[in-house]
Image (tube, rainbow, N blue to C red; front, side, top):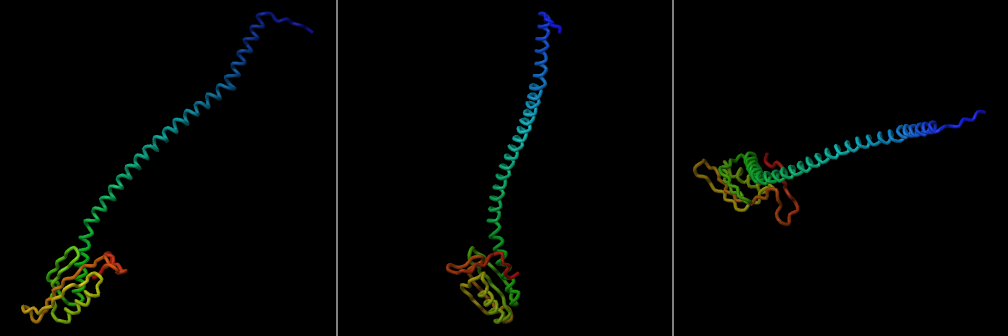
Length: 188
């Protein structure tokens, strides 16, 4: 067998080749995968930051929407408070007009207060006037206070009913268990 003794130059070349081999192996086995995972992690971080910014914008829009919704609810409550007396007044008038139509009578004047109504009604006969009073007494909307039935001399035997009644529209008197909501279409 042949024994070769390497000289210094060959040893240096072998060491350089071994170092280069180790450098290439380190590059392909360790550096490239680490670099790829670092790039992927940076992409994930950028995506997460974009998602975070979107969620912050959604939260801001949500907070603005909630604030606007609160404002709209306050405005609705304000408008409802303004509308309720108008609606109640209209419903009371509709109720009175409906009762007078069923009894062949005619409303000549009506005055609505906060809790009281005063009205003058023309009836062609005493029976019509009395029937109207009975309808008003049975209505959950009125609690008659004072009633004045007089003979109207200007018309042929007609009667004028002057009535003052306490309104119980949408509320029950103290101690009563029954409540009549304003949404019930009395007299329509």
